[in-house]
Image (cartoon, rainbow, N blue to C red; front, side, top):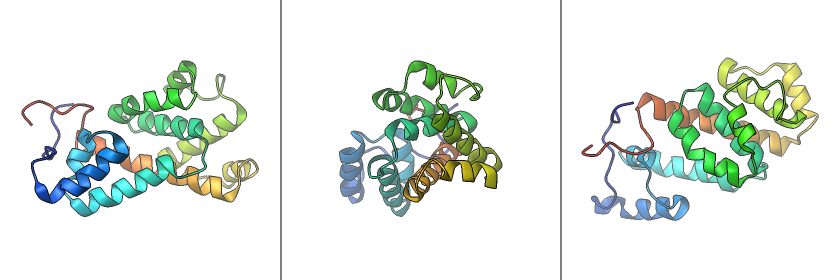
Length: 179
């Protein structure tokens, strides 16, 4: 991947962005290349930050399931930036290296338990097919309550948005120097 297709806004260069930049740093620890791209549109950057903060930190979805589906979406959408950015989060959430590596391969066998396989099947259906079969949804609904299903579905949808943004605009983990 070459340089990003849109300018990456250098933090601290526009006083009009200072408050938003402080908010992003408070939530994320830094302003990553994806946020540098988002800062080209203040309303989108603000909304994005609110949505992704809710998805990542304000739901009751188990952190290991959240990170498992984020990694799987990244693989399915060929968003290496997203995958690389979430490996550390996945480890912190308790995912083993075998489970992290496994999202790149078949999901039908160990190291995943039944709920993880079901969750990954749901992720694949939403990401690849868009439509989820009644059978798959009923199996999921037999294991998770409505709140968790909504949070899981929102997580998968949000990270499809993230990965598609990254890939379309060719945003890499670290910005190219001079861009």
